[in-house]
Image 1 (spheres, one colour):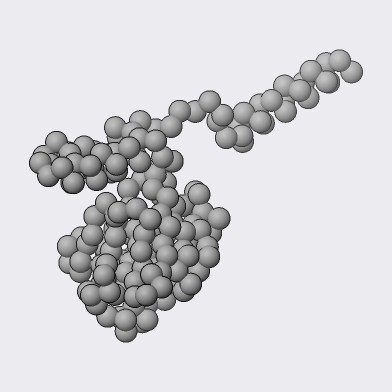
Image 2: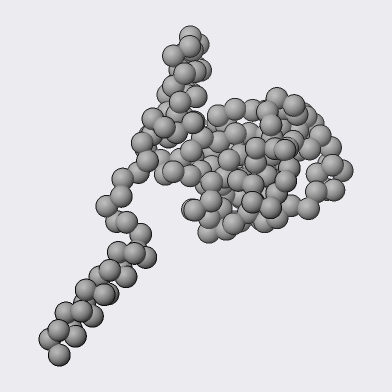
Length: 186
């Protein structure tokens, strides 16, 4: 009976090691993060004090944040966000568009790479994609006076159509023609 108990305990421990998340695993080195490399290179070239402060803030977020970015939608209407393409997605773009329902937050295991604004940053009518750095926890709200979407932190980059390999629909009709999946939710 003692041998059976010993074998059973050893078997349980082996199964636990095989399927359990490693509790002592280290976070991947921040220096290998593409966002960190890009921000560090831009910081070395920057001369404008405002730009330097923005880049230092982004670097701090990457160094201290999680290994994903999180998006929360408090705009009162669905928000279009960017994330990793599915394996079945054959589009030529680096990422894919998803919808994030009002009041929802993206799943912590899913990296929200950016936010699409159909009306632009200041409701100027020029659609843009706002890139987020790893570790960002962005909250999108709607300005009650203008209806413009506002973020709690500045975007790392602002892309207009053709400036990055991101799908940036140029018109509301083009966006409406797309069938967007829902972003994974928390």
